[in-house]
Amino acid sequence: MLTLDLSGKTVVVTGGVRGVGAGISRAFLEAGADVVAVARREPDTLPEVGGRTARFASLDVRDPAAAQAFMDGLDRLDVLVNNAGGGPFLPMADGDLRTHLKIIELNLAAPLIMARAAHTVMDRQPEGGSIIMIGSVSGVRPSPGSAAYGAAKAGLASLTTSLAVEWAPRIRVNTLTLGMVRTELAHLHYGDETGVEAVARTVPLGRLADPYDVGAACVFLSSPLAGYASGSSMLLHGGGERPAFLDAATVNKEEQK
Image 1 (tube, rainbow, N blue to C red):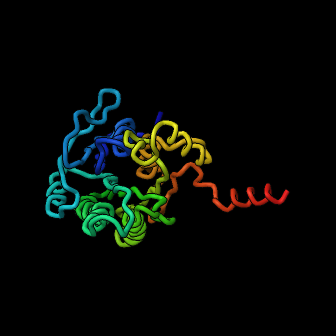
Image 2: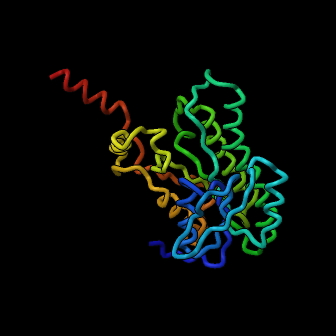
Image 3: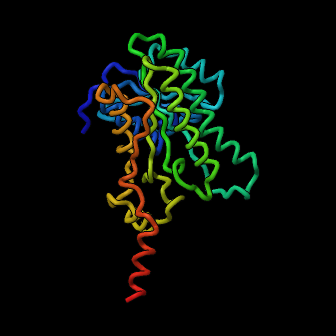
């Protein structure tokens, strides 16, 4: 259970109604915050913890005018978590070019739009605010099959460091760089349960992240405990990936016996 108290704080989570976003919303609810979960379509159920439920707001985060109108309608804004994103497996030479551009738009342009709109609210508050970008290890290593997504996430990390300087000291901006997370859509990436378990064994901690793990890290980054953290990238990947050369070296040693 979380022990940090964010009672009275207003938190906006984009894509906050399912998957990783729902885990983030639940973690903030557990910490006592008022959560606004943003998505284009309202789900059948909203994130809920202990009888407290996230509010829903319908918004296309790629629309600058709509994003600004949404932010202007808030009484206060303490935390923005730019979680909305994703993209299909699509090699760069395949599919329609517009599809690749839309992936970049959702994963890089939309967080920029939302952050800029949030700035107008946070900058006038005496206590400022905190913005958390949900990044990915795809932005710091090769990402074959999802090159546009990886490029967007790399750009998001750069955007974070720049905004942290431009908007200091009132607004802190950080990136949470995720590894593999087990959600209701995990099978689309990792196959059936056997596939998920096989992938999990490649992670040093022996499992994929739970969406709640992501939420707990977001709560920490937005709390006073992380009050001196800005422009940083926090890795949340269970220890990363075992370097392929180690396995190749092991095989080579066996062949030499």
